[in-house]
Figure 1 (cartoon, helix red, strand yellow):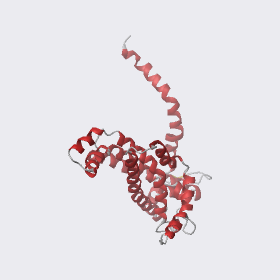
Figure 2 (figure 1 turned 90 degrees about the vertical axis):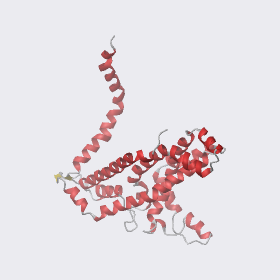
Figure 3 (figure 1 turned 30 degrees about the horizontal axis):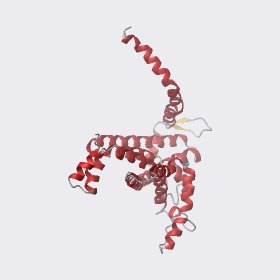
Figure 4 (figure 1 turned 120 degrees about the horizontal axis):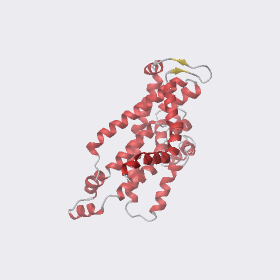
Length: 294
């Protein structure tokens, strides 16, 4: 039998295997995305008939001070969160890669917050960072340091959200970096030791370059997730105090489910989608300059 005759049958077989996954993807992801794009051109409150506005929702965003404040706060969150979670996750991975005992138990302990509900984590950190009764300020008081207001202080509310977020995500970043570290051949380090290279030289010229694919993956995923920060803000601060922690997804939620401005919220979500796509595309274009595969 000619191999080429199997082409249509093979394609149908592949389609049959993919159908159980493609149907939910189309119904619950691609379909709602297409619907939200259409809704972004409407004025609709879910109760009355929708009214066509064209690009008015997008035009209104340009003059919305609260929207631009949310954009600034989202980037401020990323500026604090990314260095903390990347360096912290890398530090833990380096420590666990030294052959410590019970590495499986330690890895599980660090990964546990990743699979914990965001509501639980946010409530826990809201209690820990309570300015008057929280454990963090109580410990700081024991050593003579006046603790800040954390989530009640506009200057400290965003750092409080960042601390909770980084604590939850450190385990995920640690696992990725640990896998990358364990994939580096030990021969490289042995050759460097023979040449008299110290710890810093080995880390700079061997570990960091060969770990760059893992670093690229961590940065990409962390950026995408960071742009969508919401749960911890909703539970810990609600966007306050004084609007200091309003972020893009919080604005989408507020306009959609508090103000019933579904079209405006949909337009805002598509602007967020465009920002994420743009930043991710820039990352992929820049990876050739610093990411080394093999």
